[in-house]
Structure formats: C-alpha cells, structure tokens
Length: 250
Image (cartoon, rainbow, N blue to C red; front, side):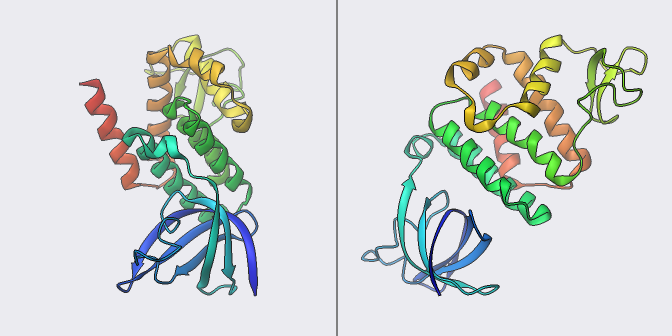
C-alpha cells in the first residue's frame, strides 16, 4: 500500500550502482528499510533527499517486514545550520546512531520525538554537547540501566555529594569511598538533565549553562564512563566526537 509517513533517515547504504537502501526512523512504524531506486542519478528527484539526516514526510510503497520503495519526500526541516558545521554534524550523527541502537533494543516509539527535538535544538544553535548529554542520560531509561539520581545509590540518603558510575549514581558522604567530591553544580546539572523536557529547552537556559565549562565536562565524563560500563554500546561516531573534543582542548 502507498502511505505518507513522517520520519528521518538515520542510515544509508549503497544498493547497486544507482540506488540506496535507507533506514528511516518513522513516527508511526518505527525503523523501516526503504529502497530509493535511481537516487544516485543526477536527474533523480530523490537525489537530494536520500541522505542521512533528511527529516521529511516520505511517500512510500510500504511492505511490512520487507524493504519498501521510496516514491517521493517532502522535507520538513533540512537542518541547514547543522549541515554547515562539522562539529554539529558529528553530534547529530552520533545522536542518530545512538537513537537507532536504543530503539532497536527497546522498540519504544517515544524515542523518535526525543531524537527530533534534540536535532532541532542543535540546529537552533543550542550547545550540542549539552543537548547530546541530555539525550544520552534519558536513553539510559530505555536501556534499563538508568543511574540512581533520586538519592544515594547505596543508602538512599538525599544528602549527596558526588557521583559514581561504578556505584550506579549519587553517593552521600557516608557511602563515598575514594570518589572525588564534585561541586554542587555538577549534581544540579545531572538532575536537571534527567528531568528537563528536551522540546521546551530555551536558548537562554542553555546559554547560561554553557558558561560552566568545567561543570559541563564533568557531567559529560560521567555519562561517557557510565555508557562504557553498562550499555555495551560502542559507536564509531562517539569515538569521533571524543577525538574532536580532544583536538579542541589541545
């Protein structure tokens, strides 16, 4: 049957000399495989849309559990600001890859709205590291390994002074071992990241947060370490992000 479906291309691969297979994360059907026939041809009306990060309404010949066929696409947002900046492209690519993996493990369609909201905020000019960390933290819930951010992960005390990926979240002074004491701002940021509605994040809020460089980096380091310990996800796009961050800090 022919359907119109909102979605975003999260991955592409070549299919013979003229076509591509697209993985499209859709609002209604989850991730589906679609052939864009002849899209590599200079004359094809699909050439400009059969690319990763295309967010559009796709008209397809839908075949459940089989490869569907792309007919046309009407772009909703081309994320032009992301595509102008290599750093933003790198963050967007990682978010696409991560969303792909998390959805395939959880099959929860609410991931789609988080993905689109995150990309939209980065395209609007919000700090891509902050947006990415917020998404990463929220995705831990879908992966079933969310850290304990309601109190001390050992005793439950609300008087927490640090974070430990090894011990699963916040720690109080009594349960802390050799973990360094973190600033109250780091604890505040982690709590906020876990609770904030991505779609409603304002540019002013992120601008205020962005001046706290050391705090942002501490939160990022915790999330990186937590993912390495508990998720089993090792994405090339994440390593590329780390390389970019190391280059910028040198």
